[in-house]
Image (cartoon, rainbow, N blue to C red; front, side, top):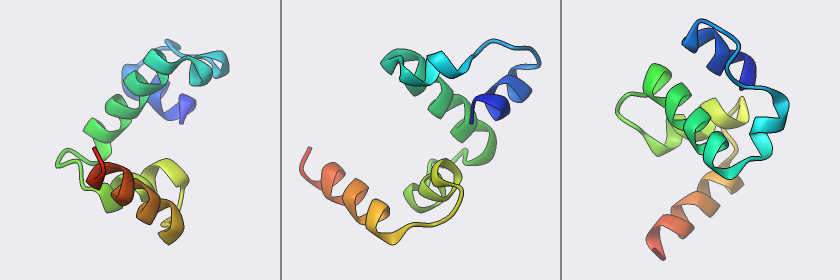
Length: 68
């Protein structure tokens, strides 16, 4: 995901260390989702972030969103 974020940015803005920084990881998530999932579909977001669709992860996300 770091490589993809840097590709979208056009330069090396993020490093692997940034994936463990809450603010930067959220920035990376939004950057990649905006590029590949502009409607912010949860199902598509899970597939992009996980590399494949994982139903258990998808269900956990839906549950968290429901309980907010």
